[in-house]
Image 1 (cartoon, rainbow, N blue to C red):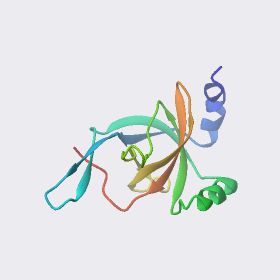
Image 2 (cartoon, rainbow, N blue to C red):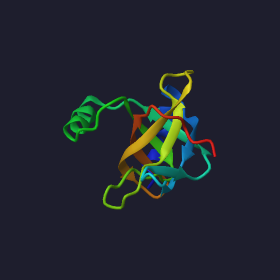
Image 3 (tube, helix red, strand yellow):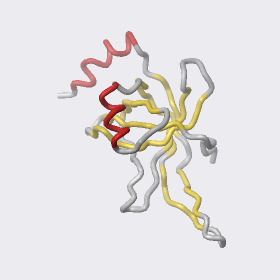
Image 4 (tube, rainbow, N blue to C red):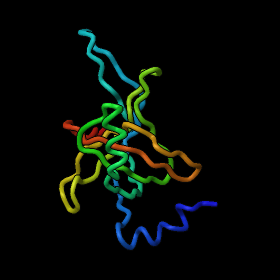
Length: 133
């Protein structure tokens, strides 16, 4: 049973889904000086529900030393976070920090829930540009 599908109409009446950009992490390249640069798949538009983090989640993430401007995002489909053991980066999302604001780049730092048709992720605001290729 897809409970998210059942309640999404009621949630959407209060906080509408929005079309955001998603850039999937592919790999990284290393130049002659040893500097590594991540590479991403071409950005795609996906529907998402962006919400603030509840206070108890903020406290939990603070204990994990994940700090900064954070949001939780419900997505149709699946995205990936950074995995140090695999030496992979995290996927990037682009959406405004505030409603009707300029789009900003967000890094997926944690996949909270993963289901066949949707996922919930925690994202952190970044200070670099969203990849355009």
